[in-house]
Length: 99
Image (cartoon, rainbow, N blue to C red):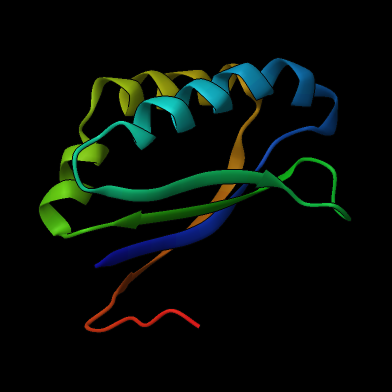
């Protein structure tokens, strides 16, 4: 499994404008083959900080996601929305268990 976790920042005054763009990205990503989980969440204490969590069955699924049309559209919107300070860490997980 591949996990990507991190954050992006945007000006807090752009949150209302960004929410539909973020929602489209999440909705499209969740329909991809091999996508187990995909979410964006607004940080409760830092306006404009969006937490990212992605879980894919394997590297092929994650790579297909990274080259998808909705990813390209999302990236194209970054400048207009003022999205910056992107920080994503990728983890390759050998085993997982539910608790």
